[in-house]
Length: 314
Ligand code: PMP
Image (spheres, rainbow, N blue to C red):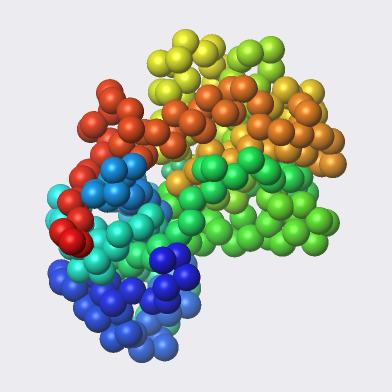
């Protein structure tokens, strides 16, 4: 039940802990988060209702370690250990619904410096909560190009999924909401399209899908990689290149790609209706293929699904 309240358990540095007992001292928050990194991944209830399917779990855990390396903090748990931890959390909470999983790592202990020293040992947490998938929602969202630029790789690399980077995305989001839009699209320091605050972006022109390169100031999105793979398998031409702001205005379709937002159609950009304002054919193709994939209804990418059998609920 997505409105069912807090889970019973989370995993913290080596074992399951009752969710309400996972506490820290006040001096362990704030400063520590300047150096903290995290992941967001999803376990979908399979179409057969009998299994949870964790989507690209090992790819997310590899990225967590990559983020930690960029931010120079030490995660004392291997990706294999965290893989087991995620499955333990899902099983312990007895989920039989779609679940968002949030692993994160922050320098542990009492920290009173914003310039958190390198190499501190981290506390690692795996939290989780149910979510409601938007994959069947036909409305899409209204996006707006932000006046806030994406932080460049040379300043605060968006390639790292660091909590600090979300200061940048948050400013863009608050501006978009203030102006009556749903989500911002940020330009990078070269004034080319980069990404949204929590998702990458693609557009369609004349039957081709176009999306900014990973060197354009973006997170190495696993959903983007998934979408590009699915498009290639459907023989849809894809261009990975710099994208101008004005290309958004002449696009036939635009969609966001991210774990949280899934494949989210954009129905208007800066107040201009995209196409006829409903999800276009290639957006729909990717979204349907993604939905079948994460629910275990398609073949060909078993390596992306980690299966957890639900206990017999007879
Ligand atoms: N960009 C940013 C800034 C994000 O926070 C996310 C969500 N993790 C994404 C892109 C999409 O990445 P992924 O598809 O791996 O969730």
